[in-house]
Image 1: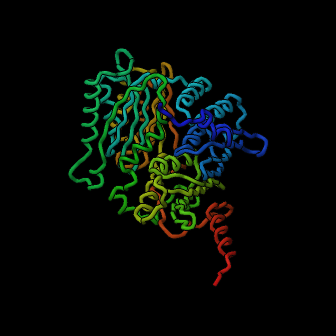
Image 2 (image 1 turned 180 degrees about the horizontal axis):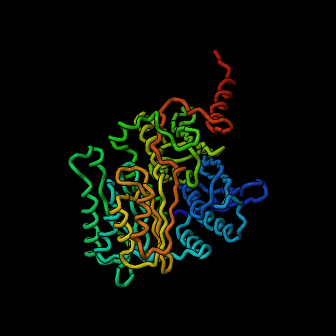
Image 3 (image 1 turned 90 degrees about the horizontal axis):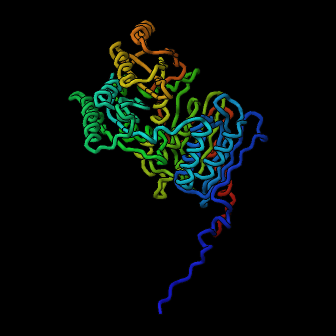
Length: 487
């Protein structure tokens, strides 16, 4: 006779029976006059905060304020949000999407269903799941994005969508391609190897004997992958953050470090205030407190949470607020091994990576928006004209909408300076098949390099900011004063 231990089949459902459903979402439009309040209660897991923030940013919601607590295995979060027009969330379809998407972030299968629901609600067909993805990272140079576009055209690849970021002499690019003749995914291993090899050669042409050791250490890498229908793809912007982080864009080029000392760098604030990032340890609770004060903008919280999560830090508590165009973020973190940041070098690296995460999305100068009838080689031709006129692409967002290609480029000249308007007019004359040609000057959003502050105390707060760290330290101090020494 063989005896086996008995397991109650209801044991697996015990947490849900004690705490309720794995995730509860409440959307409140009555409590606040100017924004919608979203409350999330869920069983905690590593990365859940990023997943929730990603759901909100994917539909262009701006997070004005947030409070996060995730101790004792339970995740509780409150978001104050507005839509892209600055209004409350009134559209019932959007509300239903948020309820379904956040309510199922714990289950991959249901997350895919929620993504499909979003595509249906927002008329965003999931075309990318039917194409081959290419990821590239490496050292940037003027005209590199144009060379990549030309190389793919020579390899008979049709670019369906592409996104590229350039920051601190590094480039990250995610492109979705199909076969030029059949418009189907490219799955032949030999052809994929040829594409990877050709693009790797283009990227490696950047490395020259005059480059610094840190620049040469930047890995030049190309990867391809076919995404099938229903695949839970990582958000493109998060992937760009990961690629830039692994490419080492938090290292500033040597020539820039010598000509722009940290004390002179600002974050584009109208009053010239600098971005300040500091880290201090709360030894009583074994937390490291990360404080960030900078110019506020959309997707700021996503960029910082994404970086901390990808660097393997767990966020236990957080407070995010904004006032008069400034944002204050505080994160109470530990490494996944359970320890706070222990060395000054580790703190310095986290500060540099957070600065890079905030900077890399923001571009200054001329934004060029183009739309034209889509055809094979269109992107290659457009970027070639830009390169021949001495313009360099520092950020690109390329999409295909039906029979039309919609492109947006942030441009500088090859020396990194502002683009002359005469050059833009010359470019416009050379693009005959472009239907819409619009130029915007985004000089207000400066991408000037910004200095971090590594210190034993948090940065000086702007008036009116709420600091969760100050409250915690005050409570600890008050608690310690209640102890009566005994002999």
